[in-house]
Amino acid sequence: MVKILIDSASILVVDSEVDYISKGYLYIENGVIKSLRQGEAPEEVLYPELLLSGTGRLITKGFSSGFTVLSLYPLRYSLEDIDWFLLREMLKAVKRTDMYYISVLSLAELVSKGNTEVLVVDAYLDEVARAARDVGVNVTLAPPLNCGLDDQQQLNELKLLLGRWHGRVEGVKVGVTICRELRDNYLALAREAGIPIFLLELERAPQSSLKDIEAVAINPLVDTDLPAIYYGRMLRNRKRFSGVGIGIRPSYSTREAVKELLWSQGADPLDALLSGTKITSDLIGQRESSSLREGSRSSVVVYNQSEPPGWPTPRTLHSAVRAVLEGDLPIETIIVGDEVVVDREGVLTVGYEVFKKAIKRFEDIYPTLPPSLLQQQL
Image (tube, rainbow, N blue to C red):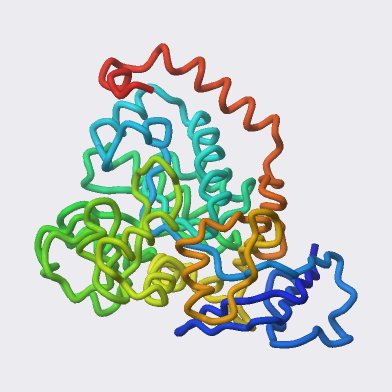
């Protein structure tokens, strides 16, 4: 599909600030938001390939996760934080092709919860890229170095990503993640490749200059002037204008992480919405789709308030933002680029047979897992 029109909708416009259109239209052409205005759609956009009714719908930008580990997805109900030892043990038990099926399941849940951009820090990221294209989500893929995994394997994966995906496939970006300490050889690697560095749990301020490179701290353990992303228990340390991530949690939902900001920090809802959408998308390099405005690549989530137990669509900016963050509105449609990736609460891009095969694969794997993983009560 190349032309999509949603008319008579309430729209939260997300850019450097958040604005509210109480009744307007949104027109997408070739994956780009061409028109987004108050009032009725003009004659020139009234004949799209897909026309969606916006009556009783609230539209806004999709959420973004600034840090996600997919290979631990099968353990998500028993883990409270990222455990690199368990991740290493999991990778011993699964094959590269198994990572595709893990990624399909986890990315499908991410998308179904309204996430349209994701930073994935993991192994076998070439398989994650394939799954992301099949599911329809935008991803930034950053192999982890100095994190307890096989660094040479991760460097080989990075070369694979740069050769196949970086700058070649829309919606797929590449970076590198460094745990705890930034070394000059890591800096040179990122500078040569022209990719961003994500500094995970930084223990001390970088000694080298970062002026010519894009660097983002994730759950920093020291004070830093770098832009930052927080996830898990460290969400309580989040500063304003920082991003948020999922990490590992029972529900792969950024909206749940943003709720923690509202409850634990008393964050302003507008600030929290920006953190969970535009700010995080910008920080992970997904700037083309980080906003919901004219000229942006579409990253659109449609919430349905028309079905019982529905409620009249909010009339003010503040109430509309709270409806999205706290109202637990059902997601009806998600559009990423020119693809409808979720419609009527079902993932369309990946067929049911793929899900069945993925679930069957893990039923076979579970009995063969190491004791350290079986103790996690899969």
